[in-house]
Image (tube, rainbow, N blue to C red; front, side):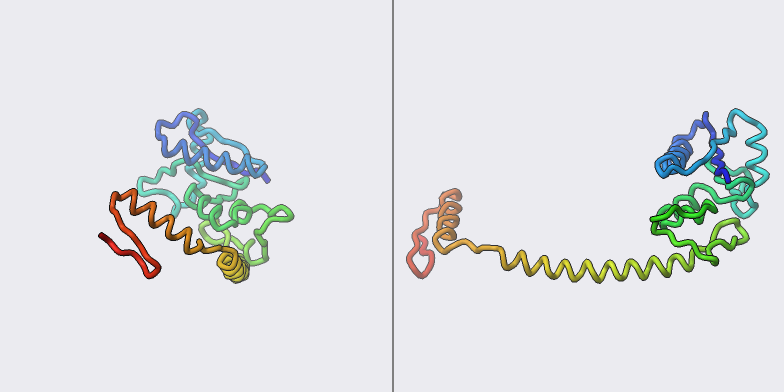
Amino acid sequence: MVIKVFVATSSGSTAIKKKQQEVVGFLEANKIDFKQMDIAGDEDNRKWMRENVPGEKKPQNGIPLPPQIFNEEQYCGDFESFFSAKEENIIYSFLGLAPPPGTKEVKTAEETSNLPNGEVSGEEHKVVEETEKSEVTEENEAHTEDNVDAVANSIELPSEEQQRWHVDKYVKDCEILRYYDNEGYIST
């Protein structure tokens, strides 16, 4: 299966360029095989992309903008769909690929069923992910409480003499003359 990313290599829009770079950079960084399909220099690519983006994913003017992502002939989504899948850590499901061993993404039978818009359902994945997050949160809270106790026990408060020295220094710095006795400060 080859992932096809439809891009415009000579786009005048910096927003489109950034989105294309983000998609391509992510795929390269994660060593996901893909092929860039230039719609600016190849009329056949442009025509194919426009015809194969589902109607509900096309903007009001009817012309979808790059980047558009396909797995062979199957539409995966546009940049916004890609970004959401990346944030939810379900990018392999989004692309219609099996996640590599050791990734957090869990692929289930329900996830592989395609929705009408060509995207992949991630409901089951979200349940697993939320359970993992709550377990991690509980662990972090326990560690945080332990750390707070440890820090509180390890802090040494300054002695009375050190406190008086700091106060005296502050008083002198403020050019205020004060004298103190054992009970506290007396100003003159």
